[in-house]
Length: 307
Image (cartoon, rainbow, N blue to C red; front, side):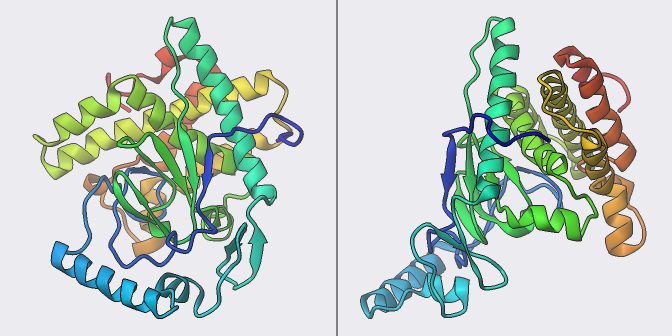
């Protein structure tokens, strides 16, 4: 993917150097996430109000003594200076590293794509913000953890990404390559598009009246549409001459590796179809490819007929 030298988005909020970004003891929540072996986390979770108040008091007491518990928990006793992120290996990496530039560039490309599509329909595209974090951070959907994988929170219109996931995508899932990583970002932006089009609000409202199995089936359709929207973005990048040989295969391989059936086989040795909430590998590949081949929103109707 020829991304270097292209416009970078200003809609990126880097919290990796914020000591409160990692190691928070106050629970976690979620949004519409890119699977990392678990299910979709919408919101909620955490500790009781009394427990939270107690922990806050303890934190403030230690803070007054000159001890920052957040940094101790996050770095094992070492702290990172301004503009640096603490990696799992204990090394420090500049917050304006190449990965940040890559994410900013991919986000800018999604902005250009969806501005054009919305404008053609007489609508205005509202750009999402993308939050880079390390470990854990807070969102309108609750506290986010790296364990949830990248996710979109409709409550604040933000995409949350712990860039360590890109390494996990390669090492754990066997999906390497810059366009595989771009697929992750464009999938979450696809959820933002769904939110703007009113699809996510309708789903969240209907989900309250559904059984868990019914909600999972509907969630699959939501996730596959986000894959299709990611494919549309891929089509536009191809038309701009950004894609290189093998890029499409990288994205399709990523879609293959994070299907519910593949993840369950890898983690537990068998599949439980009624628990699927993102779609099978074959479905994810098919819907990304459908968006990529057509470049049309009308091709991404995952709510009519079989998926």
